[in-house]
Image (tube, rainbow, N blue to C red; front, top):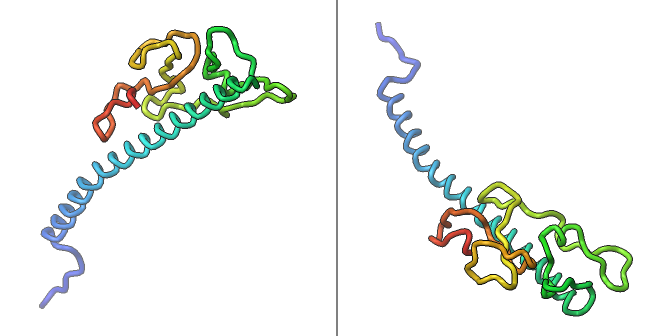
Length: 151
């Protein structure tokens, strides 16, 4: 009597398991790389949005459209000023520059390093007079080898 097998042999199961393991081993680092690249892209976008908002604020203050506090050189006092908005000369409504302070994708918190106009370019502490620039508080290294805090 001859038996017809209707299943897989052990050798076939071992081969399929090995192939699946190899594919998983290749896919996992690729997925991590892709996730990190997406977070870096989001960080670049968030920094660009906040820096553009600071520049817009400064531009309006240079034109005399915003009342400027002494010692701020026309820059916002805090990031919250960009969200809450400021009164513009000749308008009844406030001008808002940001909808909200973005969350740093590298730290997961809405906290950013700040530099005042009076601070040194590589300063790690904020002087508090105004907000001239923002940077990430993450100590991590980007895919290109630079530090996130230096972006």
